[in-house]
Length: 417
Image (cartoon, rainbow, N blue to C red; front, side):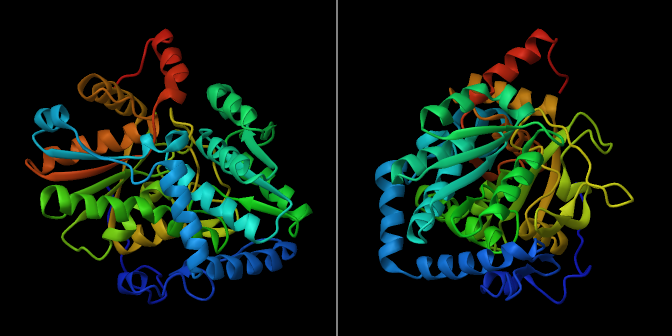
């Protein structure tokens, strides 16, 4: 649990500004967070991207095309499932927003097909993407295959080894997968390489960024494309229960799933929002990826946000059993929401997350991704604080990709929750 950072350096920005659509501002800032911190060669490309994205999202024909892909190809709306046995065990009323049932198995496809449509509209010759757990890479490969666009996906060598099935899926879908052997060889290094590629050809290449991070307009654009999760979930809860939930819970790495779920609830003051980060194996730098809980402001990958860094400003390596949560930063909108206290961010350790995955699989017949399992563990904690509460949880993806990791943990003697 963290203390609110309310009032600390927000440049006068408020939650009301965010709800009213005044954030990000004309500089791409959410208070002190966000902006564009990139090489000069990318500034024109980002300007064109912002203009193209705003024009597209205002175009009824583009919105109709996007909606058709969401409906007919991805399978939206995704179901809202009441977790009967977990609800009984926890003494709460738990509802799952089932992004695991979206095409390709996770929420990432919502953003991927939207940006791929935008890339085609803007006349890009090729698409590049980065991936950590592999789900954004699979989604990008699938979206580009759907639209006939060449696709290259950068993936850290460490992540590629522990997410081998997703590497195979990307290749089968026609993408070139480039394993990154520099840096920490995880998502951070993959983004570095994707940015280097983009700098070399900012006009002909479209960078399909997978999370609500990076330079403006990406955090805003990804949020807009992922908000379908929260819009559907909010409407679904009202139809199913007659009211809004008491709390909304989601896992947070870079933060696209969480911001997509949270955003339509921001104006509902009675609804608590809880973001769950990767607590890893401990509280020291390098042992976790709990950025909103333990980070400090800095610049990474073209944006100012909360980062895990040492006293000299050097971004530190992270650890998590989940390949999708071990990013050393968090999106600027999440940084802002943490600062003003609208979202409460907590960390869940490796062992607690694995135990939650196993509990969900045994009780509900659903194998969640390790990322989503962090949110389940956080929701279980919250249920103990609020007996009888109605909880909406973003089940961001399915756990097929993590079976190899779980087998490895069992062979090594498991984890202590």
